[in-house]
Length: 265
Image (tube, rainbow, N blue to C red; front, side, top):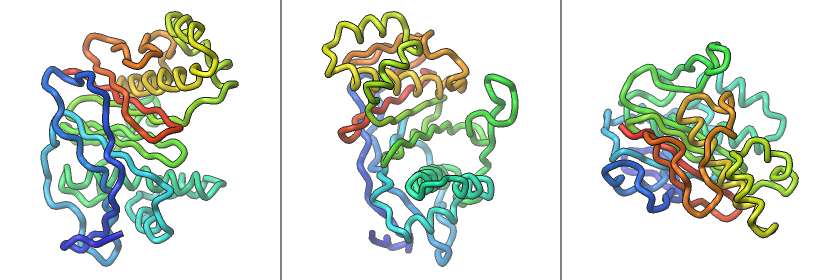
């Protein structure tokens, strides 16, 4: 870990890459390196901005296991009271640290976009798509920036965009998970999986599932909407589930699958 000239500790992270399926009518600009900025209490507020988005989509990927105890403590300082309470509720330290790093990463990335200190971001919860309660997906009270966050195991994935966006990252599903989740797949996807050799089905199911999750998160419904309604495909290239949405796989380390969905403007 090193300090930049402004005194902010930075840790380089894995750049997130996406497949070559277009995400919009104009190709996205270069994806940014996944840098996690965690200002400590002795440093001035982080934002130097606001800054514009670097293209229609920015993707960031970080690994929880690369964070030391000091980084986790600094990350906790960026969270609000509700997030800290949720972090304390985790029984396993690894799960707690993953939650802390994921939400601090999101705040550290949003902060310079809005020119607002990371711990003062105007975050809110949209109404739940199922019951209308105040526990839907997180969003900004200000317009113009959309985001999505996902974390699984050791990975945290964040997307920033000027239009509704969803991301999902998951560890490769177990054989039992593939068997038990067939009802969540579109009929065409069930047929596609059945035609595959048994040893290929776990990976195929996982990439199908992250595509569905990314799309449903982008819609704002989550799993309130039946994932079996949408065909995203099990093959190497995703199938767009709707004319006004683009869907792409994200290249992540072995043992995981990830996808990003972006609404066309």
